[in-house]
Length: 140
Image (cartoon, rainbow, N blue to C red; front, side):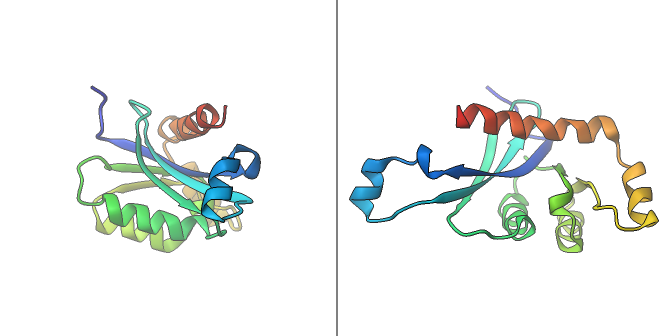
């Protein structure tokens, strides 16, 4: 059994139409061009904890707020790793209110942003790449 508690990483990727089933498109009447998929992955076990799919192009922070809200009561999310696309005040504040430690890189506009990034735990943040490995497996 895989571990479902602890450190999780969030990231988004786009699946294009070539991977969508033509049979499904004909049957449903939908023509899917792009499918934006956001995953919440447990770092230790590479288990997919949550999936969000959208045919639109919502900003990553909007999706992250939904995922944090959905997983806040479970004991499976203690630390949230995210890249600079999740760099807004709301996701960080939501994490802190829910007792989740946000390890989200700041976009570097000022020296203060660089200082925040310098304080990040680099070894912990490096684990964020595991969610990209999961996307690689799903896309192959």
